[in-house]
Length: 118
Image 1 (cartoon, rainbow, N blue to C red):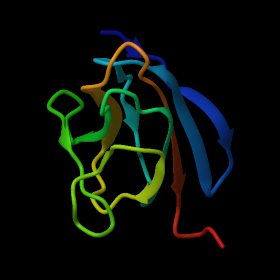
Image 2 (cartoon, rainbow, N blue to C red):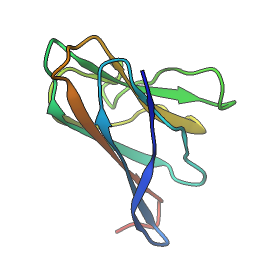
Image 3 (spheres, helix red, strand yellow):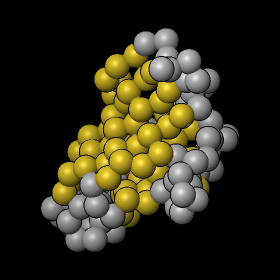
Image 4 (tube, one colour):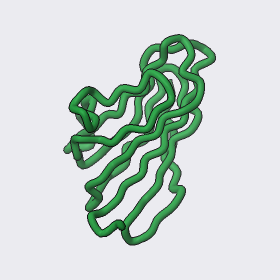
């Protein structure tokens, strides 16, 4: 199990794009502090081999993480490539890969937007 580094892809006044790449079975990502952004969209893609799950975890203290909720109020757990809007708005978020096999290799991109985005 490894903790994958968060990378910044894009930043402007109203939008931020971040990614964690090469998430393998048992890996998680460094926590991202969401700050003033209120619209969170998650894009998971790659090899979801061995029934891999990409869990999007949230925390308000940066230490105790739980699975977040998606726009339709279900848990934000991806089992295949997908884009989902997050319903919950915790202070910190991070990905975590549960289950899978030696071929599991997932990328997770997150887009944060403010209310000022058109």
